[in-house]
Amino acid sequence: MEWKIDAQRKAILQDKSRYKVICSGRRWGKSFMSVMWLLHTPLKSNERRWIVFPTYRQAKMVSWSLLKDLFAGKPVRINETELSITLDNGAKIELKGADKPDSLRGVSTTMVVLDEYSYMKENVWGEIIQPTLAETQGKALFVGTPTGIQNHFYDLYVKGQSKGSDYKSWQFTTLEGGFISAEEVENAKKNLDKRTFEQEYLASFLTAANRAAYNFSRDIHCKKMDKSPRMFWGVDFGVASYMTAILMCENTQGEVYVFDEIGLQNSNTFELAKLMQEKGRGLPVYPDPAGKARTSNSTKSDHRILQEAGFTVIAKKANPTQKDRMNALNKMLEDATGKHRLFINPKCKNMIRDLELCTVENGQILKTETLSHFLDGLMYPIEYRYGFKGQGTSIQW
Image (cartoon, rainbow, N blue to C red; front, side, top):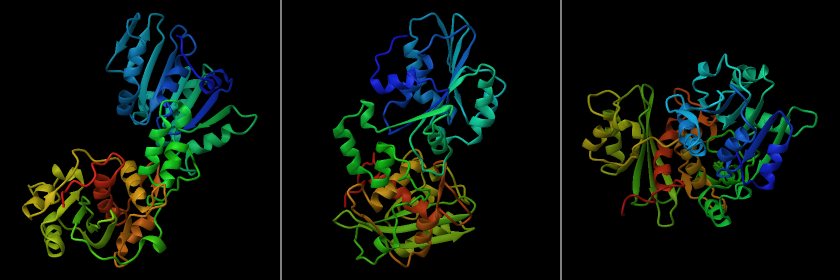
């Protein structure tokens, strides 16, 4: 198969290291590079090559169409159920999900790509994937965007920077990928907080801390402000544990002020709605989208209970990812230009605690019985209204 490739990708393909690690900014072309690496040498009879994603669903969404397009019109067998392509010599290319580890065991492979390795469990490589390469002395390619220095992807990157290792690592910014213009990158810089921009577009490990709200500072963000009539609620239903409602407002400068909070343990949405009515009746509410189909303690959904209590419920069809919610939160705390647009009333002690103590592991906020629910209640409206792909303000004030 012939490829038109630039010098940086050619250097990766020609390098003799057994294990290669690519750290790059988003939209650098990781998926394209993964397929290029997997197919740049002829497939021998009956050998197996894999691309492994954190989940099987991601595998299908990201690379399956690209692979099928590459083999369109060629004498191959395409299996849509297994996400596999079998050549006439018996060689097989397969897409896999690390969330189905049993499907990765007991097989011999020659080349494996681990795409977004930082979002996989650490044992996926050493205990599951690496043994499949032992018999053939096979090779592996790890690709991903940084998620902090307390992560196994970072450990492999560092190992690849050392001489005399089986590993070799590279680092590329989004712009170096050649797929995204400088104007697009600059636009992203305006819409993201500084740390997220450096992590996602400059491929920086050092800026990605393990705090969910890494841009939060008591000295900057905790202060009393005048309330605006543009008020709205954020709600986390906290199934079987802790329910929270966060009351906030937006002023004419686009700043958001969190000035009150409600927390109920071992309660239900009816009780939460009553307390919300006392503090801010009839306001827009941005709740957990899952509440549309779920109920805390009733035959009615959580959303329906809030609607019947007089609130206007606004939610996306599907729950935004935690990464999207955290990006939106940190952008509001401090964007890439240094501007702060989110402030907290010092009396909201539970919210401040969550902002300071909630941490992230493998891209997910670590939860306890009480920790993170106030933060979740804050992030639903913040992501909906001010997220990177956000619709802007959904209410005409």
